[in-house]
Every structure is written in C-alpha cells, then in structure tokens.
Amino acid sequence: MKKQLFLAGALLAATVPAKAQVVLDLSQITCGEYLNAGADDQAFIASWLSGYFHAEFNNATLDLRAAKHNYDIIKRHCEAHKKEPVMATIKKIID
Image (cartoon, rainbow, N blue to C red; front, side):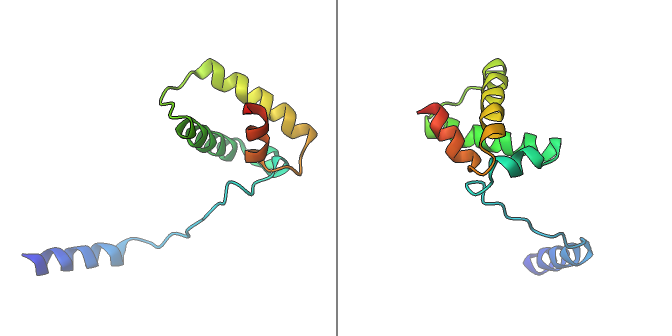
C-alpha cells in the first residue's frame, strides 16, 4: 500500500508543471515599489502587512472601514517618502 501511494505521488509530481518560486522580503519593499506595483500586488502586500501587524498586537479582527482609512494614510505617507520601506512607514504611523 505504501509503495502504491509513493508511486502515485511520484507520478502526480512528474505530471504537474514546475512553477517558479518567488520569495519576497516584505520588510525591504519601499513605498515607491509598493506604489508602482499592480493593483493585485498592492492588495496582496497590504493584506499580508495587515495580518502581520494585527498578529503583532494579537488582534484577530478585521474592520474594513479602518483598513481603508489606514490604507489611505499609508498611501499618502508613501507618496511623500518613496524610498522608505513600507513596514517602517507603518511602524511610524502606529507608534
């Protein structure tokens, strides 16, 4: 049975096309890079950062109005400080 499962897994792995792995160090993304990213990438980065900072404060809630308000504040700050990392910008705003 184990041999059959192994063979089935090996066959499946051989038939699935390989995909490139992308690793992002979100602590290094600058405001300028963030602002120049496409809408989907901006939404992904914003979601990840929101989760990161909510976890830091042990906050498991999501207030969509507050999220939009915070996004607007961060976007305005980023427009004026394009070389600053986005995470540093957020830390300044929440401190």
